[in-house]
Image (cartoon, rainbow, N blue to C red; front, side):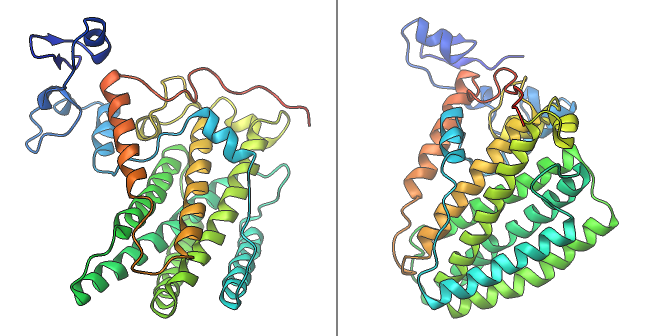
Length: 328
């Protein structure tokens, strides 16, 4: 089965064919991948795993679809915010203190990192990073209800961030498993992180966003280092992950091609973390009633994802095997 496109005169098999005919294309709802509430569409009636993961995609908000050029730019610009105020210095010290403790607990090191250390580090990191956005969105939601005023668009961005981190976690769980110790760390991190971020957001919301910005900086450094090791011949991560295929859930979420590798997924996750870093450092400089400057970006992301879906296309990342080997 292939989606058909209604052109006003007839159905064609895809948008590209309709453009060749010089016709304006509109996908009929029944022929799109948007879910039907009664699951009446042909692709919703199949039971294979790929379609199940595709169905899961539409329970999420539209994420930015990264291109190779955008990711290369982020890789070359691993900037870090320099603390300016007392609250900046306080949350910076707290975050990087936790970072050093986290490195010690997970056995993480910058060179020849054991694969298992990276696996449970990513699981704990993503479960940890998914907390602040949701907590902040919750507080802003309640504040809007109490004050009977608008939120000015912040809630959607914060929820999108939390959901994106959760998708990182679900993607990791398709590749490796969490043992009892990892699960204990996940629960402990959530128990500690939730009241801390909540209290900080009540006292000083800008400091909470600054804290998350510093958290995302460490995530960017972690992912950049992991990607470097995967692409460097002779490392444990290269041996295990250099030819590992991307899971279906990641191909769908980031619009990757069928040939995409797990390292391409890691690059998308890295770029997501860079985006969260920039968003939170921006929010840290704003007043709570300032309009969200990222609203139009969400609209652009949704439009780009829709156009790729309508054309049956993917992003240019991972369209061929992206790995070469780098001299150590």
